Length: 200
Ligand SMILES: C[S@@+](CC[C@H](N)C(=O)[O-])C[C@H]1O[C@@H](n2cnc3c(N)ncnc32)[C@H](O)[C@@H]1O
Image (tube, rainbow, N blue to C red; front, side):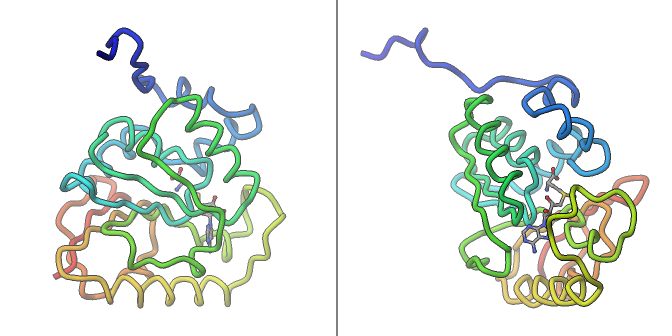
């Protein structure tokens, strides 16, 4: 018989700065601008975790903050993140180990290279904006251009449009170029930055 005192539960985090301690200082400093705030991650994950065994994909998962917080709060759902920057991908794996959460996984790839049909619901924190933004970048290691912004937005829009009715999407700070007209807003935050969508 298993000794329940030996089962180590995932850590619980009460503030963004407590969570951000999972990462090196340079990554902590990027948090306010580039990583999802804890309250937004939990609210979004709740909307996307609409059934046991559902697969939720974060498109551009950074250092894994959304997925790890979602995985801790909703152990019956699987959270995946796809991230193009190798360093951030490795940091997300390390943070997952440190947080001791089992139902979370990360993929190192450009999102255009993976099978989006394998996932039920999607989270999107304006990942393509770096292509048209001259301001604070995560780093300068990735090629950015306005044409890539258009290419990625159209690619994602087409993929989301092909998903079955009932597919859920959360956008945070999005210009909405990646959201097909077949998705209907069902909830919006007072500042209009966080939107929950369901495909008709
Ligand atoms: C604003 S950050 C959000 C990170 C994470 N979703 C979160 O909320 O904490 C956007 C991330 O998307 C990644 N990204 C941008 N374009 C991508 C692409 N085409 N494929 C995979 N990742 C991408 C960036 O490298 C960056 O880490």
